[in-house]
Image 1 (cartoon, one colour):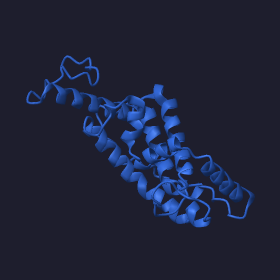
Image 2 (cartoon, rainbow, N blue to C red; image 1 turned 135 degrees about the vertical axis):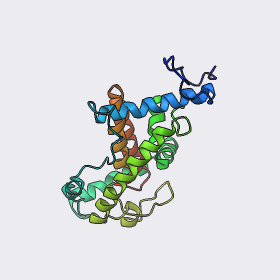
Image 3 (spheres, rainbow, N blue to C red; image 1 turned 30 degrees about the vertical axis):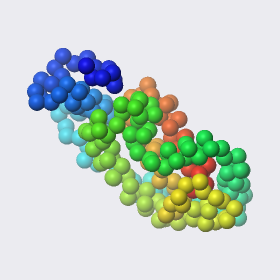
Image 4 (tube, helix red, strand yellow; image 1 turned 60 degrees about the horizontal axis):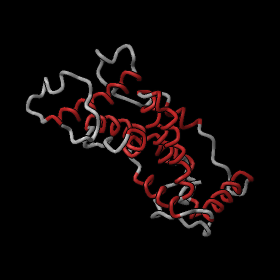
Length: 220
């Protein structure tokens, strides 16, 4: 028995290559490999069986992507004023439940997003190969996000206007683009490539991340 944590994979060869592992360890290894294999198959449908995992998840034109981002609106422009007004209104209507959601999103891990869709069993401990995959992908995208932030240097909302009161510990860095939102979108693309039937669920998780950062008062 696996304690009822999740269904046994339909694989008669579980443990065949790892006789020293317990049954639960064998199950977790197979599930981990299935998640990563699904992603690699989606990214490289013809050559995943004979090719090594991609060394880079960052497209060669990433600098062009950073340069193509539109500039944030000026503070005194209609769009800039609307940004601030929206944030202040959201703050005025902020509920304890929304604060709790913002605190959850603040932790910001691919597995937080995955567990919201797949269930509580979706953890780094259960899926170490998948954890390595997302760590690699996230690490490669991070410099591009840093470059984008450094290009615009848009202040955080609470530094622009003292009426903004974040419900989280005030983060360092700048506010455009949102690192949480951008990374969530990247993770959603990877998850959805492997599990297209869950695309809408992951898109909803991206929206949850975006609005939770606004509700928290740390992004426009």
